[in-house]
Length: 215
Image 1 (cartoon, rainbow, N blue to C red):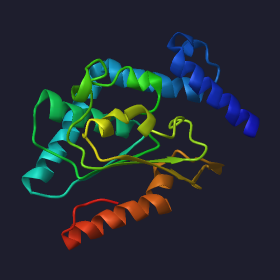
Image 2 (image 1 turned 180 degrees about the vertical axis):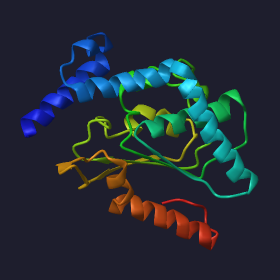
Image 3 (image 1 turned 90 degrees about the vertical axis):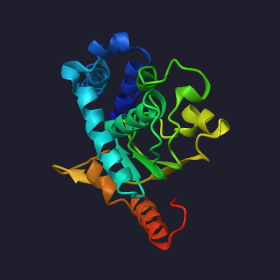
Image 4 (image 1 turned 135 degrees about the vertical axis):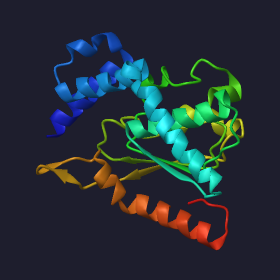
């Protein structure tokens, strides 16, 4: 099992750094995951724009109610959340802020994702969202989608620029089984994970007590 995991991890890294080789990857799971990422960024059938607009509407509604906002993005959802926040703060100059961005199982550490992100070719603060008050990233040991479990080494310039106080990377262990097979990436495993539960509950208590939301 370990050898199979290491091979799959190698194929992910290969496709991440050399996209031209993706069609030659024999592992269907790896190939489909990378191809799905490409489809989103290509915006096939306008799916990227539609998905981001749905997220923006939810955020606008929350802000209109003067709610505190904890935005959770799992897997590709973390990429969508990141791009939504970038668009709102950079393209649309919205005053909207999220108190906490919580990413889990995120592929934001992958080179193939970073090359396509909105703002990727901008300089300085314009390269990143400017509306995140706190960012916590949780990645499960054994992840393949979050093959780079640390995001601070990729987005640390946001801290240097004062866009966010810190990017808090945390490891976790997921034990969710799907069809009898361990699946550390499944959203169900993350949602019942002790680390995620601790972050959400602490944020919720801080909102109830009137403190600055955080974890």
